[in-house]
Image (cartoon, rainbow, N blue to C red; front, side, top):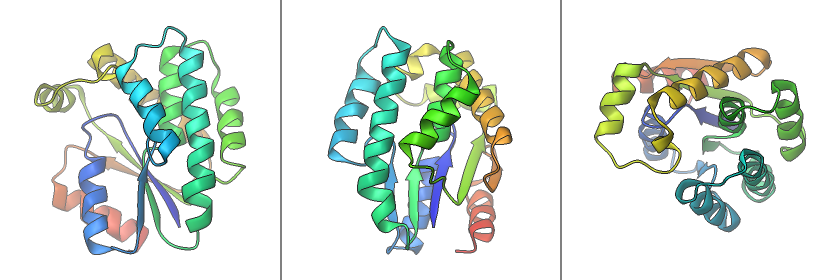
Length: 191
């Protein structure tokens, strides 16, 4: 089962993924970008460099996604594969950056994933106050430095894309306790 955990920074994805890792050591835990050697290089570029071209940024995410699918997801599809982010983040960021349409992004991601969408998406939503509080407690990368309003627009665009796709999903209120969220996810995924 291929499941992606989606949401903007500091919404709690990594905490929940770590809880799944502890209870399911057989699961393949990965991330986008960064789940492959190429992905680590792409991640470094994306998070530490300010690319002038938003299309270049999009294409780098798509290249990572295609390699990640081929190297990690497809060979392990018979087991449990949990990815910290995936195509929905890519679509959200690209839409927030502007200059591209949702349908075009869905088609590009469909191509990168060889038409193989995940079985489930766990989508974390947060609010401005919670995001502000959590971001203030950490140092920012190049994407987070674009600001809170930008990140909330990314979240809005991710939700828009999620609503347009027929992929089973769970929407999680990221303001809830770690335990409440973990119970909801475990019940939803039946793991």
